[in-house]
Structures are given as structure tokens and as C-alpha cells.
Image (tube, rainbow, N blue to C red; front, side):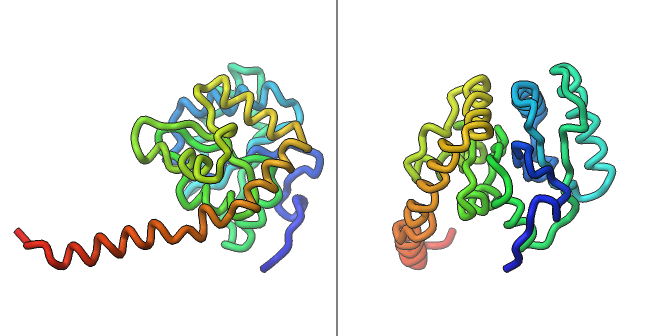
Length: 206
């Protein structure tokens, strides 16, 4: 694999990087205000996004986000948009950031697995439906319930602590890596799928 520095990705060495790498169409508008409050509370914070599928999607999202930022006294200069990255470069971006912000209503799946594989802490919330519960379930599996917020204000507080408290963040990262086996090497889901498939072959087809 490759090894990148922040400067390779156009990111400040001194900033607190809040990684928000989700597909832009998955980000519900309620997340805009939350991200804006985090940046307003952390003057050293930068929100790091990944570009959309085309420049129009990226522009529309930034226009929308800019409204929430302005309401909180924050400018779009506090946002960095990464271009399309190779797989290796994207994984390096995870390693270089302080924290990943999960989305509400449609939480990270593979995005969160990539972050956790890199030891990157995630702040999340339990959603109403399964699509909004994936990241929280991963954190729960890792025994990291303290990263699962009950509401938006707590989400902001957890994100800020991860972004600003280096010693706590490093402790959380060590715990993530030490417990990787619970998430990536658990044979139980494979056994359950095997049981289902073996049972399905004997069921009548309507």
C-alpha cells in the first residue's frame, strides 16, 4: 500500500479533521446543522468531504451546507472536498483524520468498516430503521457505546472530544484495533448464513 501525508491530500497538518466521506446523496439535511455546530465549537476543525459523482452534485451539496454553516458563523473555507481517490489513497485518508462523522437516517456500512479497520473513531447514533443503525451496531459490537450519541447535542459533544482530546482519541483508537476480531473475524454470521442456505434448499418453492 501507499503512505500519504496530509499535505499530499491538501489538508492542514495542524487542523482537527472531521471526516465525512459518505456519498452526498445519503446525507440528510439534518446533518448539515450538526456539522456546522461542530465547526463552530472547534476553531481548528475542518470538515473533510469526498466529491460527489459529478460537479453539479458537489456544488448543490455545498450550497446547501453553506446555509447551515453561515447560520453558525462558519464559512465554506472550513470545508475541504477530496477529489476522486484510488482505494489506497482513500484508506490513507481515514488514517490521517481525527474522527469520522456518521450520517443519520442512512448510516455508514462499508464506509464505517473502512474507518474502523484504520482505527479511526466514529461518532454515531441509533437510527429508527436498519439503514440508520449499521455504524452504531458496529461500535456496540466493539464495546464502544460511549461513541453512540443519544441525540444531536451529545453527538456534537462526542465529536468535539474526539477531535480535540488527543489522549482520549488515541485510547479509543487502540481499543478499536485491539478488538478488530470481534468485528472482522467473527464466525457467527457466516455460520448463520450457512444454516439459512442449507435450510432454504429443502423449503418448497411457491
